[in-house]
Amino acid sequence: MTSVPITDVPTSGNAARLPQERRVVTEIPGPRSRELQARRAAAVPPGVGSVLPVYVTDAGGGVVVDADGNSLIDFGSGIAVTNVGNANPRVVERVRDQAGRFTHTCFMVTPYESYVAVCEALNRLTPGDHEKRSFLVNSGAEAVENAVKIARYATGRQAVVVFDHGYHGRTLLTMTLTAKNMPYKQGFGPYAPEVYRMPLAYPFRWPTGPENAGPEAAAQAVDQITKQIGADNVAAVVIEPIAGEGGFIEPAPGFLPAIAEFCEANGIVFIADEVQTGFARTGDLFACEHEGVVPDIVTTAKGIAGGLPLAGVTGRAEIMDRVHGGGLGGTYGGNPLACEAALAVLEEIERDDLTGRARRIGEIMLPRLRAMAERHPAVGDVRGRGAMIAIELVRPGTKEPDPALTAEIARRCHAAGLLVLTAGTYGNVLRFLPPLVIPEHLLDEGLTILEEAFAA
Ligand SMILES: *Cc1c(COP(=O)(O)O)cnc(C)c1O
Image (cartoon, rainbow, N blue to C red):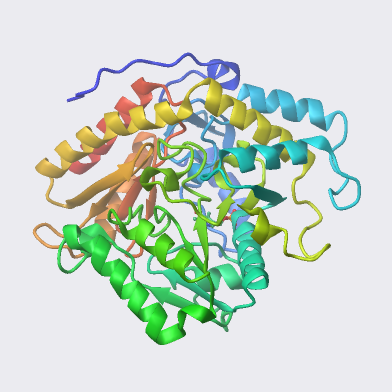
């Protein structure tokens, strides 16, 4: 049953061109996708995986269309990237116009206005009204890596503190910051030095209960930092305000503010990795706003540019301005097409109140999922904010993770034409990241498919 009445937002551009409907006309993947998958196997190493190897020809609004003509409901947004919708018409228009003027100069060689405008916007929109500076790179990992470089430079310290279930990327430093061994780290060592991991306030799995998770985890982290590293040796704490790949774990209330306060009291740079949570996804523009936490540095990527590769590092002017000239940069960082896309994304978020849309998506999804949890004891936890929602699957009556059931439910959803992603340290989380512009009838239908997958 739907407890929130469903209404559809108007669609335009690509979304209007593509019928906003689920349509399954072949097996999934179909024959054409299977053919492409065979070609790929001979050309691409298997280390690069795909959640669902249907080969895409079009996408927009709430659907992804494949080479066999199937139209899938999109609960993934390319991992929280196409928040404003795929091929969003205003993004396309600005990118197309820019592509006709120049595609690259390298900002470090001859600069251009759109880069500056994106940085101004990031400085204005990220939490806190202190003076800020931003610069642009290509990926989330590159943003996190640069944030750590800057924190080390500014503090003259080396240690970096991260948390259980954290994910920060796949480069040497960021895979070291990442918690989960398989598949991100296995066999890729040795890892970067001076990285220390602390407990995260994971409400569902905190041994003394969710209500104690915030204060107890914060106290443990502070104790371990003080006793094992020494607060004076810590350059930065890097944390996701909601752990993404780790399973959409919202730290228990009070945890983030306590860690931020400890950082402030000890001259430690507090880096919020908002790569997955940013740009309206959680119902706020940035997830830190939920508890009024003001980070010293914020890293952004994924949702920033509607699918074009772009990432940002935004921080307090007095930290960012320390690094010597030429110490930061990169050939493609802040590519002009990506900057134009980012400016369009920011306009879209404001014009269409996409933070409000994200909250509404949560209001539609959470009651349905909670009702499912009551019927199916395998659903151990339902959680998330805005349009960043997940369920954690366990063996009924226990908290023992059930990754096999999780994979089976995902498989059934895929076969029925609903694209869902899995996540979690234990591989037992189904995560839902619909585009914020998804028509509500598709959201509704997607939830019904999920219910049917559980019923089966
Ligand atoms: C995806 C992600 C990254 C890495 O971003 P890439 O663009 O894949 O390098 C870093 N941090 C978080 C929280 C992420 O979700």
